[in-house]
Length: 472
Image (cartoon, rainbow, N blue to C red; front, side, top):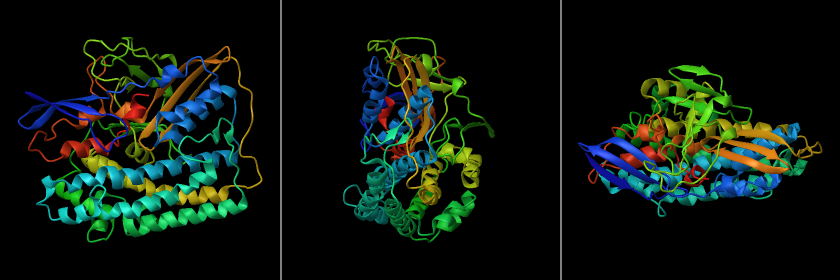
């Protein structure tokens, strides 16, 4: 058995390191290390509850809205507030804008450059991939960055700024939309739809959303111009539909009022129970404690702890590791394409990427409907009083998956604040029972070592790691 260490990974938000035990050129065991401790949960203790709205978005520069939305939802529950319909729609639009921009960035700038590596020089698609997706020099970046920037102009209208907006509040959104701004929002969405249909998919969004099986997907992609079809051709050639399977247990908090919450395991979908979540610190550089629900959780450093190898806790649902992300959302929503891919090969590299791009095709039309449903002149936010004693939970879906904030207030101050982020789920270490996290499972059996293709990178990036959220 040989151990190699890969890291720090580039094209990742934050720091990531892998320790891989190899035998015969394949991974026998993987240990995922999130090596940077940040301590936001400690920073929040003793502060005024509404301070969370200014602090938690700074956890991350690319999914700050998701952190804002989770904090606002937890505070809303503590305050007994329900946002008005306009406020709910505005929140959905703000969160969807960030999530879809993230999907686009991940595909073009984080994931696809790995197909341009010299290890693939003999593949028939390598030259075209290099021309299109090579880091910095590829022609796709010059097209996708302006499209992304124009799409993010939605944030100016909806949230005032991005990242780190303060428009999302417990009672809704402070940024009321006028009738003229609603027209401009629709125009920006039409521009973004045009880019997706012409460059990413090479087809209309409804046609992509209607694809119902992997065979149908690959037949649709064959010979079609577009960056998604180009990915499917290369991924099929490399067998990425058969690589990167974790435990095939999936979880989603539900998103936008469009996708339901739930868990999926063994072909069965069951309702999601937030009380079934625990966090295990057995292999984490944190003080040893029995697995606890986040509402009773603590974050106390033990940097010299024997047997620990990461700052990431091990979230578990009903005592088991679960995968979160677009794949889980679309599976819980019952989309037939994702259901077919899971039935064939489980949660593969290809399935994760397909699920993200499927969300682009499905959510943009929903955003257009949400904009049209806005009622200028009607309230966007409800005011309320902060109680001296209260608790709340905020459960949302970030681009990478399920994000939860658990808050308790005593004597008018934050007594406890715990966060479980998507990459905390997916990049969790082994727990006290020895169960590896989803990425650690997904890397088993993958070729690795000096002469191996970049398969490890494909598997890691298929989860779209965001390590600064992991080690909040």
